[in-house]
Length: 266
Ligand SMILES: [Fe+2]
Ligand SMILES: [Fe+2]
View 1: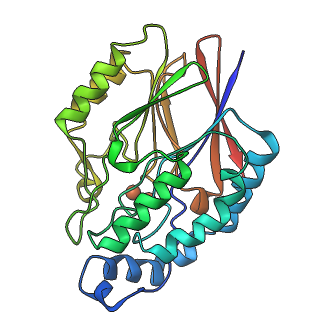
View 2: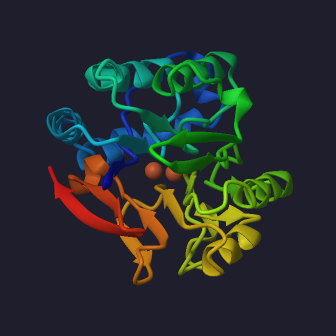
């Protein structure tokens, strides 16, 4: 039987600084960015339309690959919480992995906000328990976290060696069950030099697993322009792009051992 997965990413809700400390940590960069740039580029009504589509078509699984917010402040999570509420209550399984903007600073109230959002969107699972395998519809979703606070002007992600090993170990289990990696950062980077400020470190072993077929699929966001780099059986990497910037997301169908992709315009 065909399995349908809806994949969206990077809505980037944003707003003003929520406390004076924001001017002393990285949040001022994100707030500035939102105020003068993102606000005009990210249309949150597209996220609403994405939710409407999911509720109408009821896929088997919905995956969100992070950057719900611009600076990880509680008020930004609250905006998204409101829009995603019907989805949470729909009973459609949802997998959410935080992006670098959701883990922007170490400020306790921001850390608490992402932890709470994680738990709400992942059926009570805890962020601290990642990496985690989520078994749904005969597929193994392998969630790792690559998003952590980094320095002021960079959006680096880090795939730890132990997490790469964890992925390899999970891929050795459940033979015949497709393995889908869920994380925020692309494993395949076309422009590692151009995108030095936004790159992921430690991704090489996992990229090899994708190339040699150990890992079937990588679902990611972070890059706001969507792309799909897959082979004839649909195996490779799918980046959903920013749902609010492009007004699109991706519907993936797994049938007869082949993944196929359809862009949903919102
Ligand atoms: Fe993003
Ligand atoms: Fe990102």
